[in-house]
Image (cartoon, rainbow, N blue to C red; front, side, top):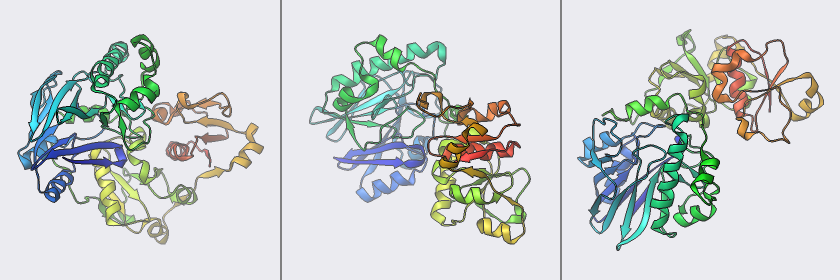
Length: 433
């Protein structure tokens, strides 16, 4: 047997390559299809089948592109007629073989109506199961995509899929989810490299219930839906273009900066706070995919500012932005902040305060907390206003402008991002670091 997991850190996504002898199957491929081509070439094997667990919401799928190169057959769910432009429909309990391996499809709705999982049998025994967004390490796939009116119904379907389809496979079966820690498709996914059906059955905190009513009470909840998800849902039905393998970030110079460019500073938090371009936003490079969609529209032209010009970093930024559907021109400032300073361009700083200074003068500040309400605890500091980063673009006008505002969050990353956003709206704040 051949098995390899492919992890895309920026979107916490897992895809898989599995096969036997000379044939391979790819599960939930991303658009960087060269990854799978290289795996097949190095293994001396051929990609014959491509499986999609569901219509993905958080990244552009690469199934149709990979199929066009390899002539592999793509299987998509036949249980939810979404008018795919590609693929062959597969249904509950359909089976196929890849040499000595047997695959069986399972209809596991809940996260989506047509969601499929796939069992792999080795020597006639269930060996592993690809669960897509049904079940994660220590978490569940969210069941709120069909609106509040369908929340309980979809959560019930999720319970039935796990208890009636996944659990009966046996505790020793290896469980292969489509996402890891940090994914927007599930809350509080645990940072563990591997898991089994039995481990999740016994220790997943979302599954420690006695019946479906308890499961719904614990897990039926509306969550924040990133704005780009709707675009992903539409695009992932189409035959789309392959994500380019080389960066298309345009190299720009200080004189090239346009008035309508959205400037994203991806340097360290401390570098940005010390000096940055006027009206620029702060988002650290490692958090771009997680937070940019809450404060920057998808179609705009973006200029990135960094002091690191390594070609690998440029390539990664470009791919991350295209993966989540940003379609505008993507540029990179040659020479970073130093080039601006040399040109005499206006730079600004962002005020910060240490925990010690804050504690001594707390009564003087209006405290803006940018965490979700579900993250706050009674023992946390008192706040004057809670506006999660997910809501800041819609609610920033609620923030009083005559107060001495301190923005807070556990790590300082979200508060720094929000403070930079508010500054572009002429709301001056101080960041607790």
